[in-house]
Amino acid sequence: MKIALAFLLLASAACAQTRDEVVTTMKKAATFFRTKCASHGGYVYYVAPDFSWRLGEGKATADQIFVQPPGTPAVGLAYLRAFEATGDIFYLDAAREAAEALVYGQLTTGGWMQTIDFAPKGGRVGKYRNGKGGSWDNSSFDDGISQGALRLLMHADRALKFQHREIHESAEFGRKAMLGAQFAHGGIPQTWTGPVAAAKPVKASYPDAEVRVKNYWDMPTLNDDIALFFADAMLDGWEIYKDERCRAALVKLGDFLILAQMPEPQPGWAQQYDLEMHPMWARKFEPPAMTSRESMTAIEILQRVNKITGDKKYLEPIPRALAWLKRSLLPDGCLSRYYELKTNKPIYMTEDYKLTYDDKNLAQHYGWKIDSRIAELEKPTIAAKPDVQKILRELDAEGRWVSTFTEGMRLVGNPKFKPGQQFIASEVFNKNLEALSEYVAKPAR
Image (cartoon, rainbow, N blue to C red; front, side, top):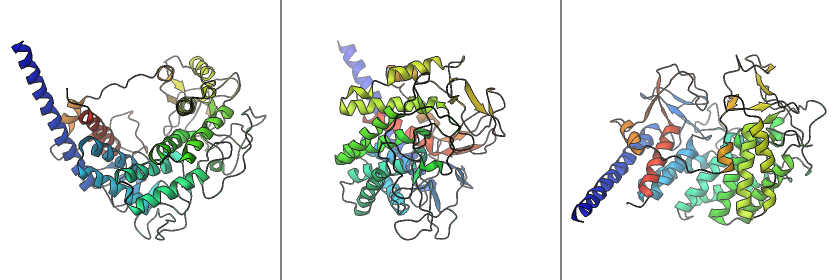
């Protein structure tokens, strides 16, 4: 009995020591990142270890920050998770600075563009609400830009007890603008500058001919997880403010996905639709086709809508969609990004942007094959626990998690790194800080 008690005491002491080490490591890493990698309170995707360059999607000046994840909003949310786990006001201050940077760059249309430029005559200045910007006023849902910004503002607003006037007003203005950008049938466009076009709730169908629209960004889209990011923002708006409009918007999105599901033989979803609910062209490498990534995202959203409404109609489309995804698997177990309408043949695009059935010599800036998440969607699994000790070991003496580029590594923004090149990545910082925060937040055993 005494031996067992002694063992438990030793284990408890070791656990406490590890937790203390984790808290110390978190603070060291966050202090470096906040003081060395931030600009005007915001962040880019990659920073040189010697700070000789900063990158988002392309080079960034010292006065430019990026809104698209894993940039400023994602970093700010990681700080907030650290604050929740530790109670250390340092992290709340860091998150507040990131939120204030987003307040500065909010467009008059209520959303955000990919970058915020603090230089009055900088090359990426938008038409900011603060009156200090230029003329570009296209708010963007693409890649979760506006959704991510709004989420940080809402979470920061709550953490600051709704007492920071500028952050609170920006969150209110952004939420109203985002709700106004939703089509009547529940879909959302890629960008908005004002009221969206009229859209009737008609069922998706195969077009008789290829559909091309000049301003494809004004049409309903699911591309690049836009709808999932929108759903996350609406869920936050409902949970943080009990804003019934946000709950209604999420339900409308679920209704849109039911409409947008294609009929047999391909009961999945397309990347983008025209107002008649036909799959259509977007960019020159985004053809009208069935898409596996967006179909898996649609399933995930429908599951969430069912969870908050209890309405089984949102689950009804899922078995057919999963069956289609299963019969569309490639021999290696992956999924093609695109499947030809009706024939369901995997289609790709060459370097010179010609459609092909051959998966060799493809354009390198786009992901043509993706991992299947079918098993996860059928039966959600518990994510693997991060290796906390590995994260601790990889932090260097300066407080940096330094990454090294290797051949075949796919990175956000497609930076032109050479094998062996080192960089500091916001994505790595966010992931590691969140993992350590989760460890600290769990009750000590």
